Length: 459
Ligand code: PLP
Image 1 (spheres, rainbow, N blue to C red):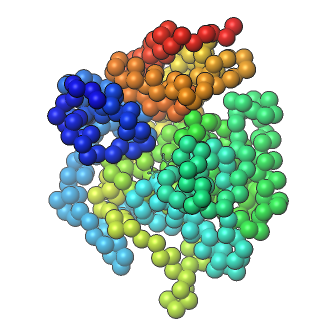
Image 2: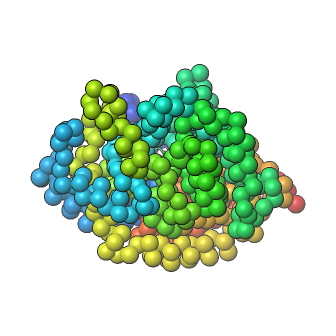
Image 3: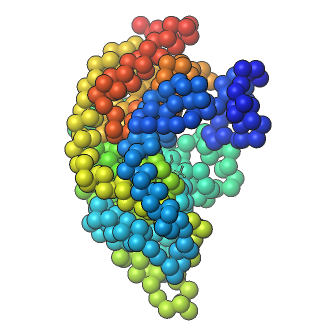
């Protein structure tokens, strides 16, 4: 155990079990105690600053301790902190529902509230299943999901997830999901270029649909970026054609925009780029700009009406969470949407992401261990490879990303790599100079790691 622990670190390790962590790692890498945040920076108890290049798990949009959002939250807290949401409502929820309907693709008319991304996924899966039951399609009780998908950590969400790291151990508990090979543009089996391809890999989904469509209620995807799998990016045409297949085979499309919603891909929602309206859209994370846990599932009138009937028919959707429609979270989410509108952030994201692409490509393109630098909107990813020609990955046991993460932290940058993929998903308030600094610290951390790691460069 590290003997130089601060009081809070020691007390944390006595009782706190941290997420997504092997707690034994904390023996020589104890948790960093953050005292405050401002803009894209977090400051620890010793006064050291860290640039938050991952928006604290992809939630923060407009910086830490944002004045507008904090003020809105404080005002709401003095007025109404919470109220049961069954048979009751309040202005922040009504205004938020209206705004979300206005901003999301046409046809999404109804908003169901929850409190996390995973809960939103559970709701969409359950709604789709129950819809088909109530439409006399009792056999539609399975879901189709892609390899490398990530939709959260609850059992339903894990069932449609495809990243073994998270769901392997729970397999005996999970639903019997139909799995189709998803897009893999970096190691494309068709040798296509994502800029110009017509998504021939969608044939993997079509094959499964042909065989199983009568038993499938919905297909779930992360449009444009399979985020947790390592920021795997794929073109809008895939989503567009998938929606057509869903219609052809009478299967719902669930767009999980928990990670990519609210401007991350350059448009307010990723589905806009495919010009489609999914049957369900799940949103969370950026919804409250990183302030409070809140999620929503948006759906169509067609879905809503399948549940709308006299009480005795027992067709209601009886899903609830205690904090459903929490007024504080709704008020904060409204302020986030107001900031988007007032400050024209979609345009700003366009300019900032173009600059990030330019400088990152220049720095990383020819790096001997960078297989690819890819970017969609304000998500940039560096895929490290052992061999640039064959794209052979580093074995996960090398924990390359983890070691680079530790070096970058030492140097004041918070990255949180996904295996061999380092990525940038900064708050939108990042400036050009800060982007330059983020990229240069990352580059130095990569160099520093490889200089000391005794890895042979493959010529
Ligand atoms: N869906 C996607 C695409 C995600 O990236 C995540 C979380 O990273 C989730 C769902 C789950 O969200 P939460 O962690 O809020 O449960």
